[in-house]
Image (cartoon, rainbow, N blue to C red; front, side, top):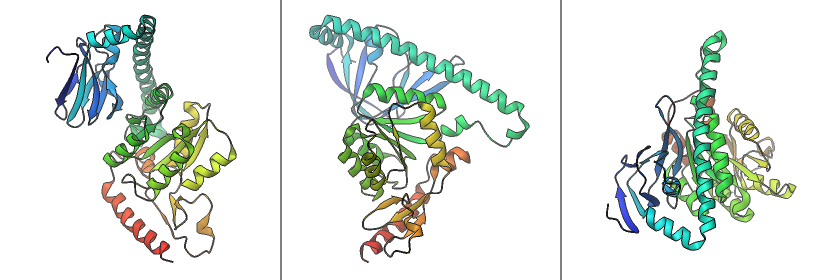
Length: 343
């Protein structure tokens, strides 16, 4: 690679941008495509800790802290990225504020240590869980639930980098592996069009009206390819009106900050075990929060939609997608919607 300050580079699908332990010379801003971030555990096994899409940056930690690469980054699909050299990165930061540069370097070093500790904790928990399962005659039939969580496609959407990373680390520690994130509304739409997700965790800090419209568009099938995905909303605003508006839009449930990973996991567990009763009408499309199915009112057809969380978490399905099943339901759903609107 030419030693330029900024350079556009490309990588083929499955090609590594860099390998854990490599010398760090460049950071990369993803212009097109997405990458998978892998970190090696104490036993040498690579574990996925993040998925970075368009607009994200990788490799910045190593060039700021002047250490070896702390993770491996591999292209999921063909990648176009902007490569930024270490010298250019340092000069830009130092020219802004030398104190700020020192502070960022310190924070990055601590983040690297936190990442390593997260892997160590995960390996210890996995070992303990495996020992318990192997010693219990009642659990011979079932696999480690953490492995089941690894089958779930999760999209984490929050404009705040810090809270998004904190939640991602917590979910990773619980066993989730297929975690993608989005910091802007356009990224959410882009991700939902590219991949079939089982669960969207969405923060209202994008804007209450914007989030409401996004959920409605997902439920009506105008955004993404799975209108039946679970949508868990997070909010700092505890006003009852916020909860009411989110349910009217079609979310499955809402959690208010401050929250804990335990509360998030409790909600996910509850959602995975409940039926997916959906309502289709000209006024509302989504989960049957208001028991419309029990009301003999014309114009509110209902049906049981696919519950991919149940299939993947509780039944331990190893299938990474249910495109055929989902598409069949989508076709029926669109037909019902047309008939409902024509009433």
